[in-house]
Length: 157
Image 1 (cartoon, rainbow, N blue to C red):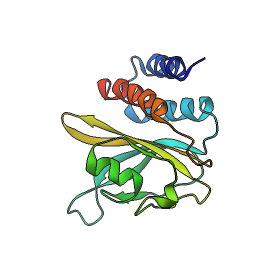
Image 2: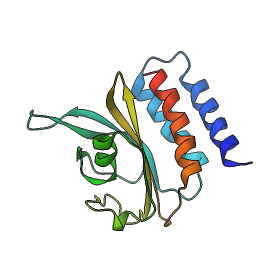
Image 3: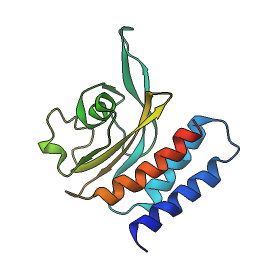
Image 4: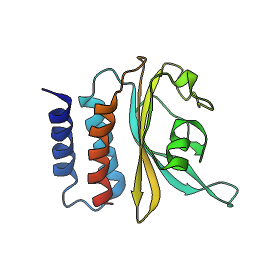
């Protein structure tokens, strides 16, 4: 099966699981489980959600539902791959996270990453983050497929 069809299947499976369920956390938990189960050669799949920072003077990403090893809990906007995705409101496709300026090493085993911002009403509300222990694990087809999944998530936010 080609990647396009593979990601269409993931979107259909996620959509079916989320259909009629209003609890966002439950839906994101199931989506992260689907991704962790179906994607090969990954070591983390999940979400970071926008929230007030601890100082109360801005926003940051806070760990949401995920599958994998324990992760960083708070990520400032503009820092690391996830924070950059928020600051630029753009998918980040990183072949080698160790070469990414400002990378935050939550798991030293991660070598490549793809992060897709989730936007609602013109504001980034969360990011989908997937890590792999392999260099250059993700390509543009993966990014496009995950953007389709994020489209479904945004529609049901």
